[in-house]
Length: 237
Image (cartoon, rainbow, N blue to C red; front, side, top):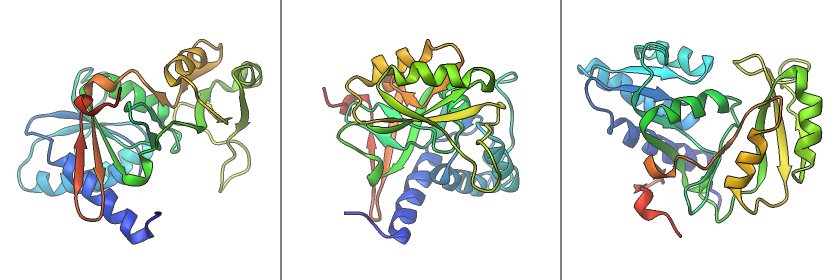
């Protein structure tokens, strides 16, 4: 049953705050993009005021702006190429802990940051947990090669559409200066194979399929009353 806006916000807040509790003094962490992660940033700001020393690598300009507003010190992957952990959200999570991300168009930087971390902490509300991945898979493409990439994406069985901006005319432009192509799949039989197939298309920068980080992923599922913490040991075969 779908929750109310207040119920969903409470679940996201619970998950975000629980993730912040996993951050230890002296850590360098990745900061994802999205509403649930912003609750983690809010919680971190309180801990920083209480003396916690931490620095974060933001995955988008939006996250960087929010982190600065909350007094979270920032760094980069150039200065900190190995991260203690990364905190991010997800659009869908299946029982094997494979994910679809990219609603916020920050999927490429999110995957770079998550891959640089010893531990990937994903915060989500219960609605993001699904029996099977499906629907829209965001794909970041070079503007120069978007049309040819879309032709090859169609060959994988999807209906690709360039994502249009809401408060400007034309396509959404990522923080990397690229386009987002939303690929509508009726069914995703094998998410891992699809991630690989999309990755080898010339002009594709990255996709929103996250299937290769299951081993070091911890999922915090928030609800109005409590949080559930899932690790690789909880993956359904």
